[in-house]
Image (tube, rainbow, N blue to C red; front, side):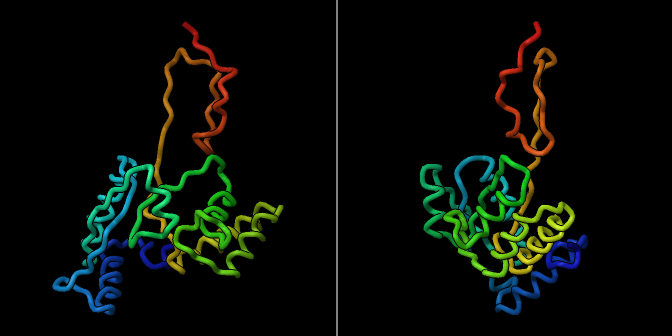
Length: 192
């Protein structure tokens, strides 16, 4: 991963590479690129969008936060009516299929960037059908690398969440692969 653009551990070097790219496009400290950064108008979206805007300033991109009300957010993405959009992508299942098919498949209505590469599409189908876990993991890593190299819907951050409960809550089994699993509650009770 560290050999990919922007993934090296040296932040200063990463920024210098990004600034060189911006210079090659005619931008610099005296000629900054301006772009709206659209996001849903709730804290889980606004906060990381604000941090993104702050980071973009380091490479001469001046982002202006454009907050969109929830009722209009998905429609805006589906119309591809944005220059830069920060959106969250959650999954109830810890499996690459949910992310690959939803976000990168040529046929997905939620492929908001419109990315379509028949070779990557075939790899997505191949990894989905692979029954050997080690081979599938290798295919998934290859697909992820291709998506990063193609700069397709870059992942800006990974949200970390925790679930807490009171000691008197009994019978609740928390899963380590998703906050959404095991929430039927028929075996949960309060011991008071």
